[in-house]
Amino acid sequence: MLALSRKKNEAIVINNNIEITVLEVKGEQVKIGIAAPKEVPVYRKEVYIQIQNANKEAVDADGMAALKDLLG
Image 1 (tube, rainbow, N blue to C red):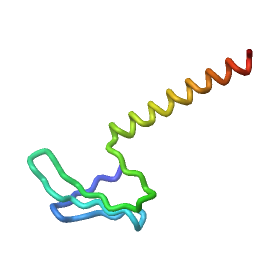
Image 2 (tube, rainbow, N blue to C red; image 1 turned 30 degrees about the vertical axis):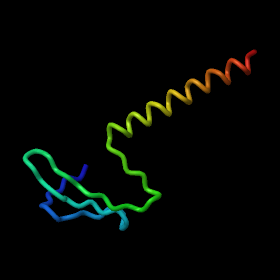
Image 3 (cartoon, one colour; image 1 turned 60 degrees about the vertical axis):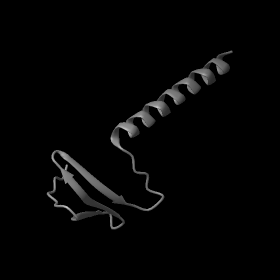
Image 4 (cartoon, rainbow, N blue to C red; image 1 turned 135 degrees about the vertical axis):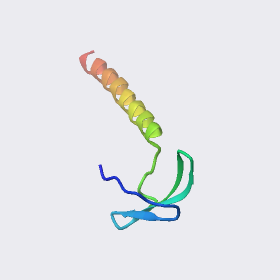
């Protein structure tokens, strides 16, 4: 993991097309802005984990149904 220090209104650039800017700092909370191409999905980590779990459950459920159909 790369750890960087940034102040308000300072930014970092990732892969030439994603820019992350520090918008505001209040106590222990930091507000950031992310500019990325439309085809790059950006999620909060807890939402990303929920999506991954839902996808896994859907595959597992569909896989079991397909296996039951195959075996008769």
